[in-house]
Length: 329
Image 1 (cartoon, rainbow, N blue to C red):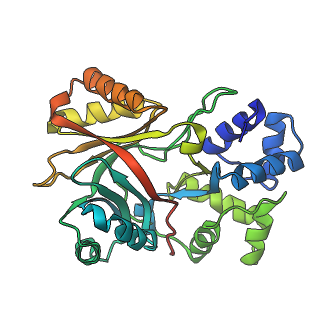
Image 2 (cartoon, rainbow, N blue to C red):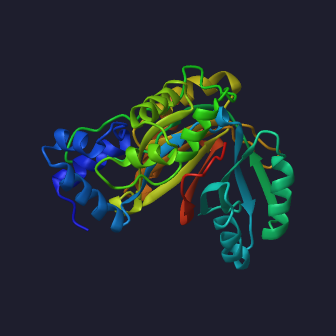
């Protein structure tokens, strides 16, 4: 699909922050000098082509009473298709990739805080027939916010919802109204002139109250941002890699904060290491070529003073699943 400059500007805006207003497409139209109907038409076309995956909230799982982890598995080549089917059907897995390493199967898993992740991973490992499994929960987050500058306008900075400490937050007290709004927001946004009218009507709530409560959830850090998720492959960012470093404890914070400033980095975490996997600092990077990812990783090592030889760069060879997990509350 050929994108004109207006398409590119629209994509840049909605990736960063979609308006939480009564008539959001009119608000976008004012920024783009378009009618609301034309913004909706373009959005429908971008969705039909698979460029926009969905429009909705990015939640802070910890504030909703969920725990998350990154999982790496060693899976025999002949088992990969079956593993992909099992994980694709798992409702608490949002992202899953095959990568070019002995640990070749990676996914993120979310479960309620009172549930036992280790037990679930043991069950999944048995079903997948994994030869080894890594459980790598985050200790601290430095950046969460995939954003792909398409051109056609200034690069915007999405709100990552990450506080100054980077320490993962605990759940917050949610009122019955909060819970109703959270559950209602967890759908792909209807492409109508007043989509939040439809959502609020489902709850027998006034739309102004619904939007005010939604904004309140953002201010309290329950929602990191409300935005569009896009297919980076279809936008030319076909190289995707996870860089992992073994970093001394006294260097993690400085290095992580430096990495978070790099536009090509979408996610950056400190994670618990494992006897089978000594790396504790992770950065997800996106570029047009593998060489571009390698160059980013090399520059990060140089700029932060990290030992390049104490790192590994895992390229994605297959995207198995990419969605936003639902968090019933």
